[in-house]
Image (cartoon, rainbow, N blue to C red; front, top):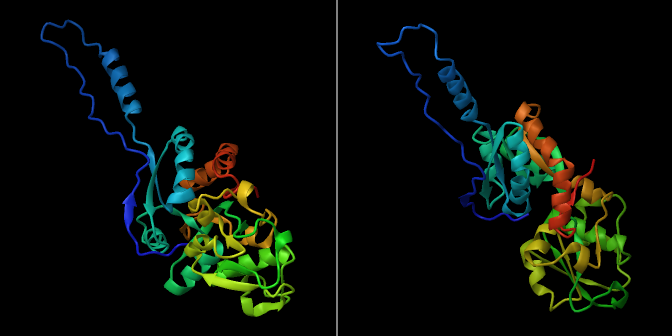
Length: 297
């Protein structure tokens, strides 16, 4: 996850239609009947129904892929009576703050470990309302294109933050390049490597920088969003990537987060239901080449 200084860029995906009230027509002085104008009443009713405002759902999101997925959900939500409005944030602090403050109904950018850590550090009360997708880590070619070509002393670039480094090391372990201490799981660091048969060196970089050294190291390990930004397709370009049933995939599924007590609100349930639909699954499969995977549980 990128944690940059925040800049709010409004990407409103819907506009609320307003209309003036329809004024009824009165009888003329020459009128000899007191019957009401049924046409006028009917017209007024039709106008009121056609200009009735949709109920708004406001969501704070990251640009890729979260805001894109939300846009794909817009029409289905409109059919259910909701106007989905999305604001894109380029940091990972404000989206939680604005939901906690009640300024937004939900956010879509984070996984549960980050949410739990944020709640603990900031005293917020945000909860998971729905699990939507995950972004698998992949091993990508650097100066070598196959793990069969790995040699003693090769260098592999990995992210240096705790969460992403652990996922990278677990993926390398799953592919036979190293062994980690038992039980370290998603807290693993390079200090937890117990077997390194190829005497691999690890170049630990800020996650956004890893893709930039592909010409300098044997392999790089990237998570989904950085692979997308670097122009990689997980399905086509990666040598190996996390499986859907891996511990990492289930742990780092990206969620819809809301303020505690609002997870069962009708509009939140509608939002999650649409995001978990077959249409959104197809949208993800058609557009992200495996860099984003629909969470089908």
